[in-house]
Image 1 (cartoon, rainbow, N blue to C red):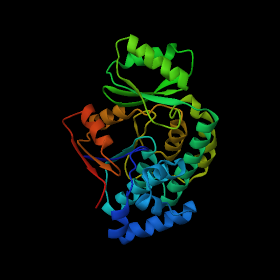
Image 2: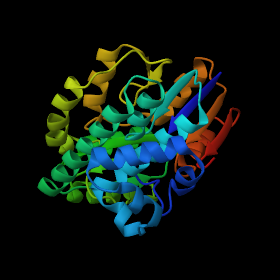
Image 3: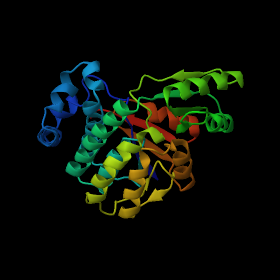
Amino acid sequence: MKAYVFPGQGSQYPGMGKELYENSAIAAEMFERANEILGFRISDIMFNGSADQLRATNVTQPAVFLHSVILAQVMGITPDAVAGHSLGEFSALVAAGALSFEQGLTLVAKRAAAMHKACQQTPGAMAAVITTDIATIENICRESKGVVVAANYNAPGQTVISGEEEAVNAVCAALKVAGIRRALLLPVAGAFHSPLMESARTELEQAIAEAEFTIPRCPIYQNVDSKPHTDPEQIKANLIKQLTAPVRWSQSVEQMIADGINSFTEVGCGTVLQGLIRKTNSDVEVESVSVI
């Protein structure tokens, strides 16, 4: 059984999607439709913009979403299951037919705007912690005087913490005292998947509630609980929770494998998910597709 998985923010690169546009009439039409929906020519930035231009919040999330979704459409995928890392969950929902391309893009644009506003209102930080000792990470976060939580369970040996900058720095220092020497601050704009995103969650809640979701063609394994879902109302509820809840990626991969998935294809920018899946289970087939 085969799952298609979709990357999140941070996988973008200059020139992304250009080959798709040039080689596929379907892709070109979808990019032009996206430009109309967003009200600016995101395709020009994706194809010809600089890395700095691509890092702008209103560009990054729609760009990564568009690359994955349009590539999946051109490939004509028929998944047995789908999953996406953070932002990638929206790409997965469109690929599985639970959301239309137009509604998916509109929600992603609103998500990007809401998260940008939350970052400005409440600055935060994130750090990658390299250890298999998850219990120590969680305990030190819990004992912190500030707001800091485990935000991404990416793979065995790689967990990301998120929260107030001072609290994240304090936890990194405490982890080193506990013998966990590799805790690296990440170059991000805010404390994603933490309580500091509550204002963004509230803002996005209504937009998700009002969007039209349908039963997907296959189960989607969602970040908040790592379980397969097909009920549109439950999918919506989990998407709303996602902004302030941890991304349980390694648990999702383990659950998919337990349910019979033995082959994974990463659709979109980069090979980050391919690497995380291999770290979780080295016996499954894994590949990445970024161009046609």
